[in-house]
Length: 97
Image 1 (cartoon, helix red, strand yellow):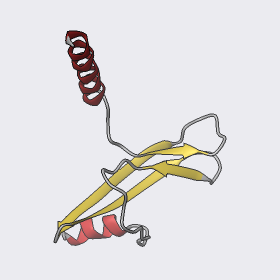
Image 2 (cartoon, one colour):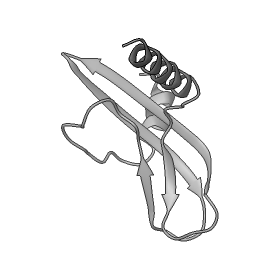
Image 3 (cartoon, helix red, strand yellow):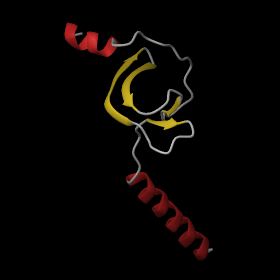
Image 4 (cartoon, one colour):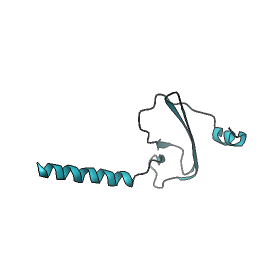
């Protein structure tokens, strides 16, 4: 019984260490490319209202080719995805909203 407690404690400590060194940042994965693209600008807007959180992310990337996938870590499956017009966050920044 003591051995189980020791193993459980070690497993929990291992998870805590892994959690401490992990980062929640999205990144692009190029389709069959050897070099990851540069991401010179990445900004986001988070809005929470009425129990719903909206996340708007804008990124620019410099890389070869045109087919990229983007992994965005979120705590729960999203209810919906929408596209917004390019430059929305830049426009909001200028207007002061």
